[in-house]
Amino acid sequence: MTEEATERTTIHARPEHCFAVAVHFESYPEWASDVKTVEVLERDEEGRGKKVRYRAAAMGQSASYTLEYDYSDAPRSLSWVQTEGDLTRRLDGSYVFAPDGAGNTEMTYHLTVELKVPLVGFIKRRAEGRILGTALRELKARAEA
Image 1 (tube, rainbow, N blue to C red):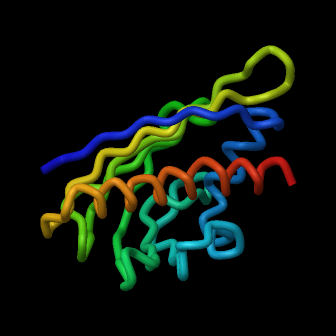
Image 2: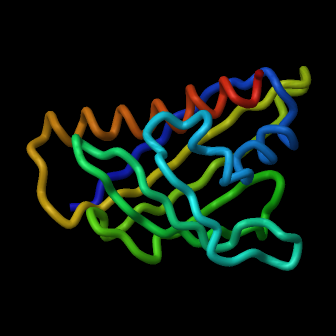
Image 3: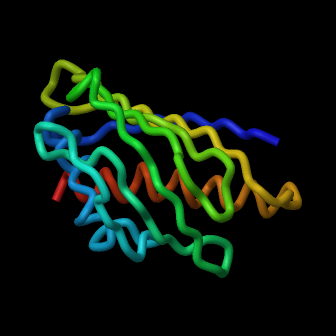
């Protein structure tokens, strides 16, 4: 079953800076607590990660997945689709970075997840909360540091 979630937060940094933090994939293990390793497999003509492989902590085990990034609306947004995954069939999403007029960023995070194995409802909700929390709180903290 496919699950979707959307969350928003205000980041006290300019949208361009937030975008730069989001696309610096190699630094994710430094600030995204569940991300253990990141390998950029392909880069676009501007040197940005186009295809990126991750290994992350997931429900007491390790999960590996590869995401392909779309920069067509950069730096306003960053979107991705999963091309490979051992626990997930789908892990597609986007960040949207909108200026709030006061030098801050209204960030919207959207994620669509489809697991390969079914999970009990409360475990699924707990995992969703952890993913969203990492994506929002930890990116926000990094961008504001």
